[in-house]
Image 1: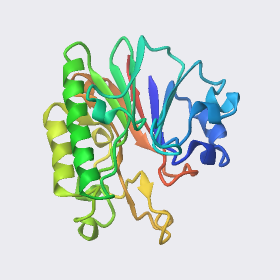
Image 2 (image 1 turned 90 degrees about the vertical axis):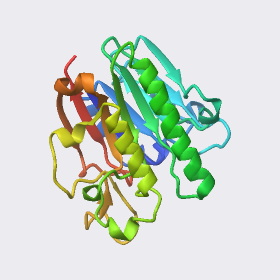
Image 3 (image 1 turned 135 degrees about the horizontal axis):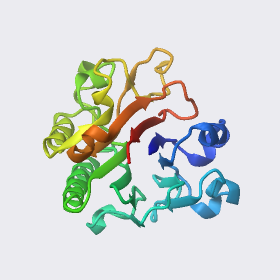
Image 4 (image 1 turned 180 degrees about the horizontal axis):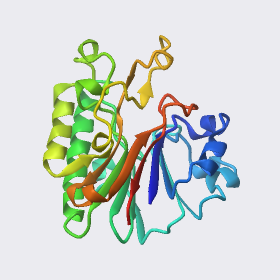
Length: 255
């Protein structure tokens, strides 16, 4: 199964930037989008439910229009679909889609950004822990695959300028420590199974010609629980695909 994840930074905006050409030609079995910033009734039917995919799922922010939001387009029909996390504090912003398949639980998540202040950083850390607890409970029955915008660069090789950003949310010690904890619980960064060098990024600021200079961050990931490690056939980043300040990432899992 080929699965893509892409923070499109506005679904209606990316539609104007050859998104449908990429979507129809990417070869994905499941395509997971974050930061869609749209409700389904704001979209034309062909954009809400692209005909190259049989199943279409949306979760959008319920309290603030034009904010957050995730979507999944899938050809293999899941056994079940749900939104949110068990704690109601983390359900209203349209950040989670959970598709259950026979071989694993698949999560599409737009993790919070902590740059707006201490309250949002605390919200982000609580969201992280709530997700981990939920994943661990579900994992008792079958493995976990999670993809999306984690909004944290894990190690110094995951961003161009680590020292300059050491006090900025997205590279704070507590955020990086949570990813360490996640890995210690038995989750595998699939990209690092195949690529161990620097200079591999998935997000670039729109300022200072960051993308042209490849001054980016790797904050978009696919993790799998340890039970699936040997079934990860490949994982990659597509930095040449434009349309957002993020680019698509992909993983292929033998099922």
